[in-house]
Length: 178
Image (cartoon, rainbow, N blue to C red; front, top):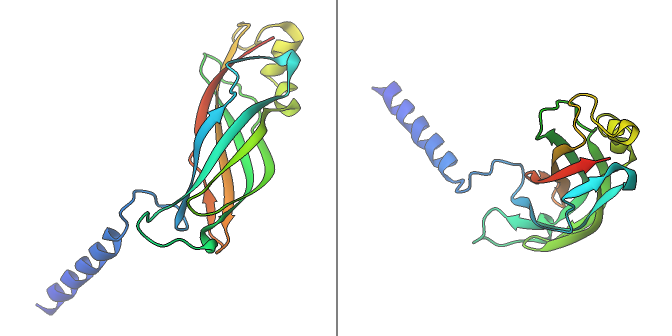
């Protein structure tokens, strides 16, 4: 009888602790970093004209508990971003990841805008598969003169209270031509 009572108490305690999280987000900290808007995304780029940037990108610091109080300790120091690539065509080779340092401070509940954020640099343009387009006009893997890529961008930072924060990836598609 006593072991059943202890088991019941443990189940109730675990249920009450896990039930306190109303959001599905399980990231560290009490804020969410979210990419909320893009502007000036190229649809098609030529490898001969790079490097390439996003005109503006808006990043928001959202408190996980929208009904709670916010403090300066929930401000996020944005430290870096990365862009990874996924092929949308039949090819498997992708450009190297872009990983760049960046600085910005976003108070809780506020937004910042980054301007002219590079997403295709010489490291991507001078390596396969994009270097194939520049050199021969075609992708040596697929024989195509167009490489279709999904670019996925994420931001990384730290709250002033010390929690590491990362945004969910936001994606856009580009066609790369010679």
